[in-house]
Image (spheres, rainbow, N blue to C red):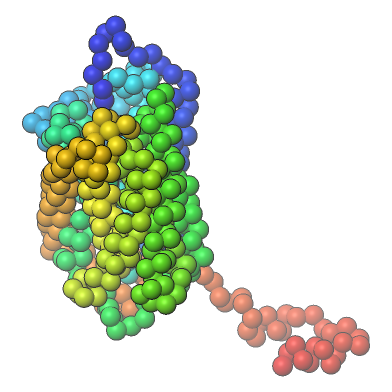
Length: 448
């Protein structure tokens, strides 16, 4: 995802094929945010379904505007000290020519900007799953704006911006294991430590209200993730994007099977929620590593992530933090696993010539991965907790206990996800047509 340095004689020319490919990939990544909304929306109780959908959907509005105003400039502008970027031409996307190429690539700057925008939109939406049922919508919207500005834009520069400290160190993050998943997972943990648990946590049943919605969301996420991952090579002239596409499918399948196997052994059943969660765990883990490993390595990455994430989701009950929809267990743990496994399974024949421990490269890359992983984790955890604390102390971040019990759909949005008023009941009976002659006995049985 980072710009390459080229000599003038080797300057690239615009590729219509790569440009079209990247526009399609951008649309696929955009689809992932509403897909995430369905995935999360099905996992909550009925009374907070719409609120969960809106917590994801609002990111499309807020982050898009911020990205155009200054986000792209902060993330991908000229480096300052390895920490942040800035280019006045990128402010408002106003100083960019229509056919101006992104540095070292064959696609326009506008195409790169819109592709990266979709990553910026999705990442804060991921955090929302940890906060289900208990956060004011206005407070959440403010948090998204502040978090994108103070956490996501700088971290994106660290990892993918030329001059960013992680980029210069040589941390491998093909499509967002650190910048997206560890970043969001650590942020989720930081916020829930500030706002506390849901009313009835570990006491009341809080089962998903619609597993079909969960499966639909997971399927759409899987579909969109091909654009998320394969598109991050910004073209496919050398086959690396194709490798990433294959590894995305392979690791996801392996993680789903591994999660289900663990679930069967541990709990005695193969659940649809487990299948969906396992698939997402595999997608998360292959995101940083898929351009560096072989398909066999992708199976290993997926299988390890599937088991580790399945184990991790239960930690919230042991340690008492209310990660409502397992953002920490899946995105933080899966992102860490996928990022660190690069240090073992990198073949040296994919996105770079860097080889991991199992391919004769020693532990050098592993230590670089550790630096990237724990640097992003620590910053996001602390900064997110501080932001949540400031919002909570000023405008209040949580709804009242009575509002939480009543459900956020009615309280925050004055709507309900499902309307049962016309399903059966007296009004429906009185409106029924009179029975046809010869069917009286059957009608009576139906009424009974």
